[in-house]
Length: 175
Image 1: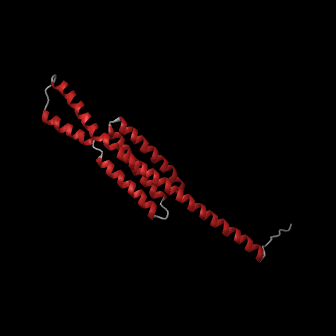
Image 2: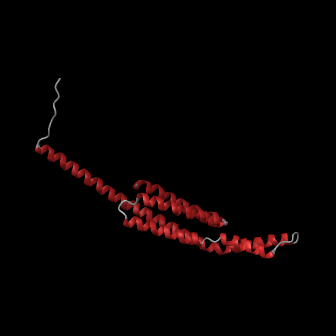
Image 3: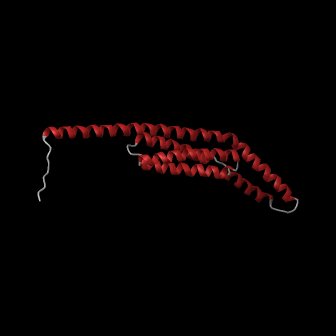
């Protein structure tokens, strides 16, 4: 049994080397184009989430006032039947209404959106960091939704979650 190994001469090796170089350049070019496309998608989705966050504002004040009015009405009905410590109840109501405030979530969400863009612009391999940031963005959006107690606000939160899911899917492409 005899095995033969063919070796390339200098000219053949130069052709192969040229093809490898062309292939690597094409891959690098494709990755750069894909990166620009992903950057555009990320910026659009982040902008959409910010705009949706702004769209929540008109519902905030009316929502708290509506809840206050409903609580006062219910308290009026209860006060006719039961005697209770009005000061204690007032403290509890203030505590409850403060828990409905979403300003803290809005501020943190905006900060996370800014950080996402900053990492995208400054890091060479931002995939994992962007994944972690999207988790934080998701937490703030979920908290916003759970505190909203308003159907229109919850619809907006669903749209935010949809945009975030699109970001998460694309972040997986850069890990």
